[in-house]
Structures are given as C-alpha cells and as structure tokens.
Amino acid sequence: MRTVELLCSAPLEDGVRAAWTRLAEAGLPSLARNVHPTNRPHLTLAAVDAFPPGARERLVDLCAAALPVPVRLDRVEVLDGSAPLVWLVRPTPELVALHAAVWDVLGDAEGANPWHRPGRWVPHLSLALRFRDADRRRARAVVCVDRPAGEFVAARSYDGESRTVTALDADTPVPPTG
Image (cartoon, rainbow, N blue to C red; front, side, top):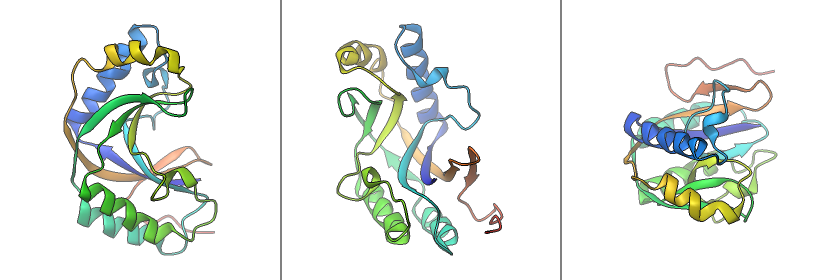
C-alpha cells in the first residue's frame, strides 16, 4: 500500500499531539501510545496498492503548487461507531481541489481504497484507533480543551510493506522501481 498524506504545521501538530496525550492520561485509547517512528498527525488523501509510473513526480508537482493549505478543525467523532476517533477537518475549497487532483493522478491505480475516493472521503486527523462510540462524549471533553489551528505544509507517502515514509517533494530522490 502507498498513501498520499498531508503533514501539519508545527502549531497544529503540537495541538493534535497534546490531544493524544490528554486521551492517554484519561485512560482512553490514543495514538500517543503508538511509538512507531512514522506516527505523526496527518491527513490521508489517498491509498493505493502502488503508484502508477510517473505518479510520484506528478504528486510532487501538485503538492508543491498547492501547499500550504489552511486547516480548520471541526468536531470530534467516532467513524463507523467503533473505529477511529478522529478530529474532522472542514473541507476548504483548496483542500477539496488538492484531493481531487491527487485522485486525477491515482484514479486508475490498482487497489485504491474506496474510503479515500472523492464523494466518500471524510477528511480527518486520527486521534485513536479502535475506539468505542460509547466513550465519544468523554473523549470530546478531553480533546476539545482547545481547537488548534494551522496549515498542511508538506506531503509524504507511507509504504505499508516497508513501514517507511518518503517525502513528496522535489528534493527527495525518486526511488528505483522494480
């Protein structure tokens, strides 16, 4: 699996990490407990089995032209009743346009995750995985002490096979295919 993810500005990332910490301190599930080096607040725009030939270069160009994108956080929700606890992101016109452009590049890729496709995508920053809807009210009280602001300032791709990330910027060399 390969993703296209947007990374938060420092104030926004710090605010989300503070919410992760508050959840953990309250004894609730939290991504603060995930110690993998790639774990950081991000917004996933797409997930596919692999990038088609030339897609990475096109994604780099798209992100360079579109970023930074302002972020406005909305309410805290549990997706699908007992799945991730998330902070919904208000879909600004700039964000929606970038998302659509990413799918213009990846639309024919194999193994596209339908939850990320235009029309089904719910933009969010994850706070916890495997969360019970019954704890949503308590989580909202813990998380929503403040609502951090910021921008999406960079893009990366997560490789599910190697569990590594690669920056989607012009300064990062394109890995060989094969």
